[in-house]
Length: 167
Image (cartoon, rainbow, N blue to C red; front, side, top):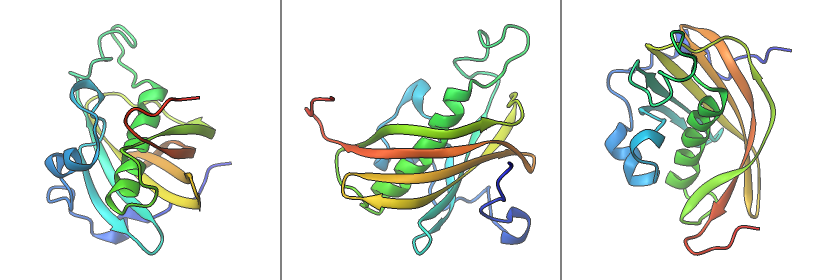
């Protein structure tokens, strides 16, 4: 079953060219750099519903574009999920929901890929926290290209501290 969009982007009058948080502001919060930076900007935040909208500008120069798939670049699903995770992590860390030095993946559930993402395009991402516990936050996420749902699912974010051993 296809989920309903978290937001009606056509009615929101978002300014994608003048985001709330650009890449420089994202870098103050998210630790990813170089090839692993998968969030271009954040255009909307709602602290009452714990929701955010951001985007990744997908270019022909992505690290995966030559090899996945040669002659027909398809954005890997795992990278799409990373994009959504970076939006959720930005929100959780910016508003100090869980603490920790980083926010890491605790799991993914019910992920579905509906359409291929092929550069160049803008992948619009939506994340909404569904539940928060002491050491984890659960987010639902959706991704759209040209107004069409391309993937969705849920993820768990967990705080990670520098020097912490991972079980």
